[in-house]
Image (cartoon, rainbow, N blue to C red; front, side):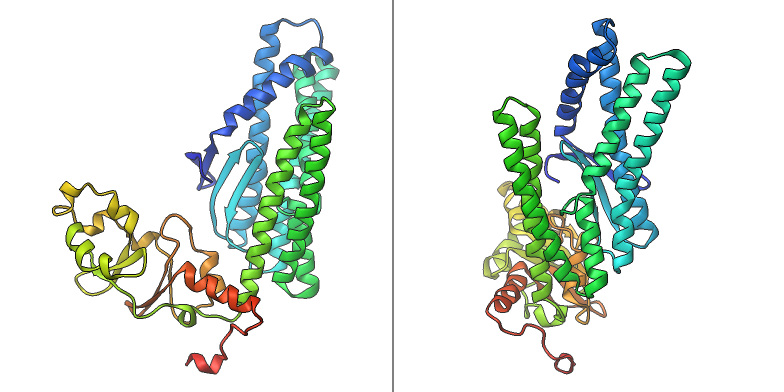
Length: 383
């Protein structure tokens, strides 16, 4: 997610934090310290409320992290790749590969909400216990507030609308019942769009009536509409690419350049004569070693272009998406990582670069499908 920085690892998975997280903590602490705690436990000093509210806000962010960590654990145990976990103002996002079966998708989807509900029950139980032993005070009130917040988080995430976890549950169930993954994806996306619009309307009306929290609901609704729409488009693309293999979609021949060339010579001899904005590089033995983007070449100061090698400005092969010609393109795109060499896909067989698959190639299949033209070549034609 843009605007986020890596702050560590959780369960071996990179943990990223968006710049909006400190803002969220400040808003939560302000509401808790100025309204909730003074109303529940009146008579304390401003310092007590301030410290307790900050602790409560941090604990709630910790709960969000555990919610996302549960998704990551469930995914990793079932062999689903997890790229990173990101916390931001509207919750958390776990970037992962696509589950292979509906059962795995269901397990991964419910793991987060169940964790939040469990944390909510534990926190409320702890608050009741503290109240029983030492009386109703700030610690007990803080635990009860944390518990209710987690219960609300768990219940809200179970609403049947993508990209909420409940939408993932609907998606998995429909996939299991129909056997059509893309159809299930489209249905979950539609539900997310409808629910997001309703949430925007409700939040805006609430805000106009003086409830500041309504604006927050409207923002969540807008986020849901955007993500749900993207997921519907992705499902449509998956339908268009059904049965298409990387070898069918690749562009060939493709301009390549030696990775030991200087940036200046590479620009003159290769980049100036290619129609692609991302170009594959070959090593001394003629094997692909990475890709270089034209904008990366442009960032090299003119004074250094005759001394720097083009491989110094390239994305190495280890960060590129590499496929064989026999692989299904949908499976290849699932593991592609946009922004870090995810596109183009390098189609490599026995160490030899056969061609590349660009976003233009992928979009062409989507447009052909929209025209009602069959996009998947017969299997016999592949060989």
